[in-house]
Length: 498
Ligand SMILES: Nc1ncnc2c1ncn2[C@@H]1O[C@H](COP(=O)(O)OP(=O)(O)OP(=O)(O)O)[C@@H](O)[C@H]1O
Image (cartoon, rainbow, N blue to C red):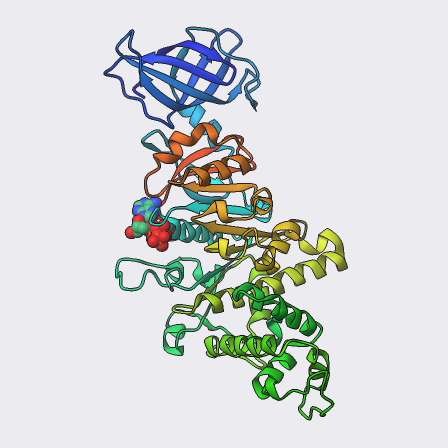
């Protein structure tokens, strides 16, 4: 909005409107202040709609009040309203500073007011919001990967919480493959202290970037995760349930070394002579077809993960220690299949959950001072309405908060995420959703009412996001920093040139 004043022509406590001449500029999402001089109240509002005003030939502008401050300077929800003809104008410097005090430490971009970036107002998420779950909803190409890198870069800077992220595209650690100008988190000035990368790349590359080899041992895995990765039949679930009491290393030994066809069934009395007597005894009642399928699936998963799943060695203690030290932990697994990615993310997530739960039970809340966020890309794979497909992730979504453990749900299809999981999320990033049903689902689960921002959500450009989070009393429009430019700034401030 240009600097001229306009006059309020109509209000109710939830909607302001005024008319601007045809040559004046205003954009959806713009922040304005309406002043009521007498009691000294300033009402903050954001433009939600613009239309033609036939009578005056100008534009009729509608805005949503987002808060107000009185003479005491406290920002409140607007329960009063400004009188008719009150002046409407852009924010001044003091008012911009007032909004700045709501921003958290995990900086992601600059506040947008309409089409303008306010570079004096960096937008950040409070670190304490991370154990209260976070959702990132973005149509492909809108800048989700860039956002994740900026978010992790800020976490490396602030070291207020641990973040776990798997990267099957190999783009977060060293930059987008095949794009020489793209950089990754290893290029962060504080990467040696704040980033731990566990990789399946060869030792030469790992050494060059200070990455550690990723190792998962058999007992880190759970047979229950077959249900996460494959579509199991009822009889297969029965076999999996029969196997739950056994160590995964024994289950793997059994399925790798035995031919389940030769097992004595409960109808036959022939003795089994292999190593895993107890397992053989227990699954004798299982359907032979289901046993064969389970065996094939176990072997397939071992083949898919053979480069880093071993009988004994495990990176999990190091991963847990890095998360405890509030580092960003990147599981760099370029080229790995969908199934194998889910299998290991589930193994690591379970280990973090059990550790946090164990400390909570043993030491109460004092044992869980740190916050950890586990991010899941394409989260509809594991958090859909089908509960057998959710495994440890639903447990974290429902119970993690009290142990200091949050889940970061990243998806293009929020309508395919279990609504009970969405309802747990206290921070939402919305990056352009074309599908109306997706937008409605998000709007109804956000802590702020996002329905009125529907036009703004539909007009978001690449890199733009609407953030609704606890700690910031209104939904914020923000342009995410371009990761490489943000890195340059971090390097400048690391070397004292600010
Ligand atoms: N905030 C931003 N500012 C400037 N450029 C951006 C921003 N966000 C993304 N881009 C650019 O847009 C392109 C696509 O971004 P990105 O890869 O992050 O999108 P994406 O949503 O992850 O896409 P996909 O779903 O295909 O992986 C990249 O070239 C990136 O550099």
